[in-house]
Amino acid sequence: MRQINLLPSDIAERRRARQITLLLAAGLLGLVAIMVLVFVLQAARLSGARGDLEAQERANSRLERQVNQLQGFAQLQATLRTKEQLLGQLTVNEVRWSLLLNNISLVIPSDVWLTNFSGSVQAAAAAPGAATGPVGTIQVSGQTFTHLDVARWLSRLAGVDEFLFPYLSLSSKSDSETMQTLVDFNSSVQLDQDALRRNQPGGLRQP
Image (cartoon, rainbow, N blue to C red; front, side, top):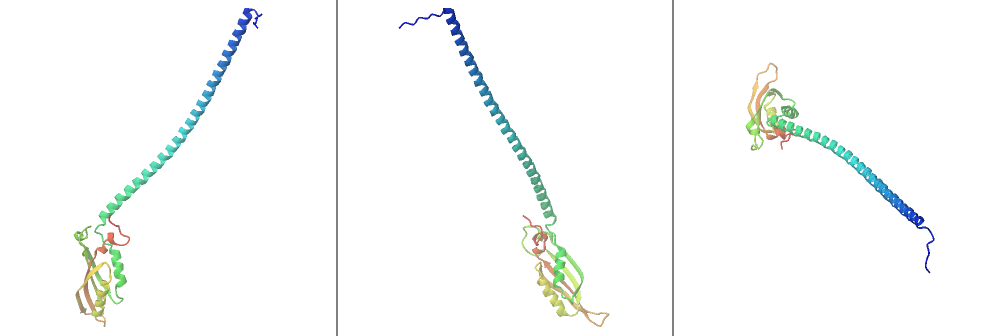
């Protein structure tokens, strides 16, 4: 069947124009909606990126503080090593005389008393890496009542770890203002490597 359009042509044109306008408006609105959505998504991504950046900056700041703290610790360690090396150089040939005197006080017989004490260190023999052997000498003078007491004194010296080769150079009776006759003696011992501070318990160990 053939369709017959009874509307005037200008009305039909206006209707088509209105339809086109509506379609364009709808398309523009859709485009605006898409742009708004894209903007929202980009803003959300930007906000997330900023949050990540701030978090990373905070982490970097913490790491930087930790690095600074570790650098301070490393400086303290370097200073400590320097002081230890300096102390090692200063005490490389040092003998702890107080410890040796204490050891003598522990072994001296009760009826023996000392009148003179002198000690010396042979620096060349005490240098690190030198062959083991005596590093010094102690000379002691004293008095007691009998020669047997002098022998007991020498035997006690032999029991001290830091001492080597106890030697008696004099043991003679002397006149005394009292009724008791006294025996004067001169003795000496050589110092072992253990007498050095760096080789003693609590001493500075050399690397």
